[in-house]
Each structure stands twice: as C-alpha cells, then as structure tokens.
Image 1 (cartoon, rainbow, N blue to C red):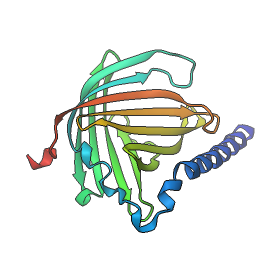
Image 2 (image 1 turned 60 degrees about the vertical axis):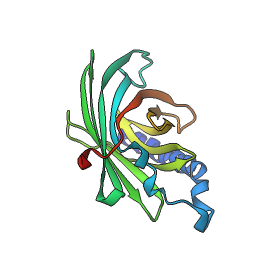
Image 3 (image 1 turned 30 degrees about the horizontal axis):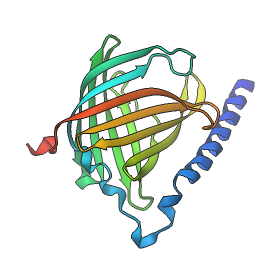
Length: 198
C-alpha cells in the first residue's frame, strides 16, 4: 500500500513537472493567431524510405553505458489524407532485431502531434508523446514508466538536411531537470516518394 501511494505521488509530481515543461516548450504555439503555421505538414519531408543506423542504451537508467547498434530501414507513409503517418522500423544487429510501428496523429485544434509506438515483440503501444515542430526541430514529451518507476520521456526529431534526419529519445526521473539519452537513430534517404504511390 505504501509503495502504491509513493508511486502515485511520484506520478503526480512528474505529471506536474511535465505540464510545467510543456508550457515552457509550447508558448510559440499559442500566440500568433492567423500567422501561426498549420503543423499538419511538419512530417511531409520524411515520407519515403530511409536507411536507419540506430544505437540503443542496453539498460536505461541503470548507470550502464553499454550501447547496442542496429542497422536497417524505416518506411514512412502518409495516412488519413496526411493528418497522420505511419513509420515501419526494421533494424537488426548484435542485440537482435527491433521491429515496430509508430503512428503519428495530428490534432488540428491543438496544432500538435502525438507519437504512438508499438513493438511487434509485445504488440503493446507505449504511452504517447506530444509536441510540435519549431524551426525544423520537433520536440515531444510524455510520461511513462520503466521497471515500475514513473519517468518523463522526451523525443526529439531533427531534419539535418532533405536527405538526413536524427531522432533521439531520453528519459528523466527528476521531473525533467536531467535527461539520459537512450535511443539515437540517424536516417539517410533511400527513396523520397510515398512508398504506396509507386
């Protein structure tokens, strides 16, 4: 019972920290009315097929610095007339295979995206992260748990060029004061058109 209450209290504190951080990250979304851009097309540049080089921290938040490397492809398709897109990730390396899908949904009222990931390993969706792009950089935040511990999640998407991109995921256990990066993917374009249109 005491552990359950402690977990709930920590979850509430993390959620408050997340909301505070979210309010600091999103002020550019709130102000400019008609001048504000429609974020529905923020991911259009990524539609196509990419070569993916991925590094993953083997044991996040454990103090370990062992990284595992993978290589493969990411295929991104528009769905729902562009108000969503679907990412199919297939990579493998010494640590085995990672196969998963990310459904990204755009909310036109909030002008934000939710990123929802599921691995074929367990068929379960992780908690979504929410956010938007500013000057070519997307920042997305959410709350999840790892080994029974409440955590904050930050996911950053950077368009390095028209043919390269970088994706980073990090966890925080102290309300966003410090972050540990645990997932870095670097993509290089193979095909630029929508895979379904070929």
